[in-house]
Image (cartoon, rainbow over all chains, first blue to last red; front, top):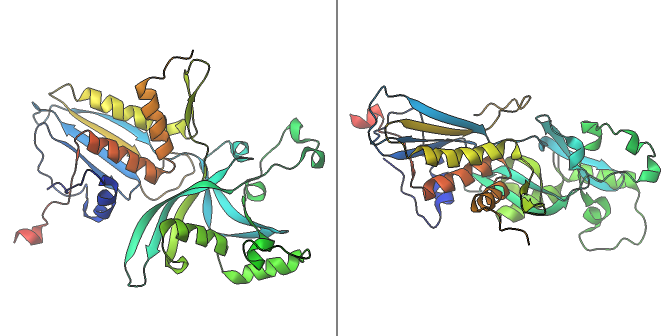
Amino acid sequence: MPIELTPVNPPTHLLDERQEISERDAWTLKPGGKYFFTRNMSAVCAFAVGGAYVPGAGFVCVGAHTDSPCPKLKPNTKSTAERFLQVRTQNYGGGLWYTWFDRDLGVAGRVVVKKKDGTVTHELLKINRPVMRIPSLAIHLNREMNNGFAVNFQQHMAPIIADATESALGAGSVPKDEPDPKKLKESSDKDSTRHHPVLLELIADELRCDVGDVADFDLQLCDVQPSTIGGARNEYIFSGRLDNLASCYASLGKFFFILLTRSIRVLTSCFVSSHSGARQIYG
Amino acid sequence: MAPEPAKEAVDAVAYFNEAWTPYHAVLATCRRLIDAGYEVRARAPSPSSLE
């Protein structure tokens, strides 16, 4: 039977009931009914049964993928160079990586939270402020920059998240002398094994939990500059992730339109992992 | 004077801004499906529960 959803807060209820939804079980569907299910919080499949549908009448379907190329946080993100705390990332898909330079970067994705009472939950995270940045090198330090710049992902795509001095001495404090970068690195490396404490604190603050509750995560960098309508005549949409969110959105509109026909069954799906090299195990 | 953008374009931009990650995209999609009258399908009774 359908899960009861409260209109004022459907996402929370939807996520809470995630484990109870399965596409593998038998369902009792009614003509004219409209249904959907999710899988792993990363794919959604919706379908509608035409009012005059009879078995064998066939169906039409629309598919799209929800993922886009991005830098994903590695399982071990901790990195320190000179006096900068950095976050290691790995490439997800084949992206235009130079476009990630000099942007205000937030973090988003899914976090596994394990409370002290033993309960484990999955929380969606969206830090919508510029907490990281991948700065370009000043032109006078690389005169060949405008003659072609090849991004080395491992070397270049580790955004700066914090100043090592501030992290070592405490936020807001002003160092009297320049600290030894080597000592700072050693100090930072002792704080935790896999991630800088400042990253875990960011996540915990956003999710209103303790740092120790953050068991694991699947996070990616995100440009916090919002998508917008632009152009002199408002004729364009300026946005990242258009491949393939534009198709996801369009499939919804097309889907609803198709429902006007009554004798067919329609299906739309939004999957993750359509990008070459994504290598995700979930759909 | 620039014309007002189409309602569909405004809603598409809102969708893109919600869908930072695949997880958020699924959530944004589900919100719209629910608003359009779709129901979430739950697990059907298992054979053991029918006994």
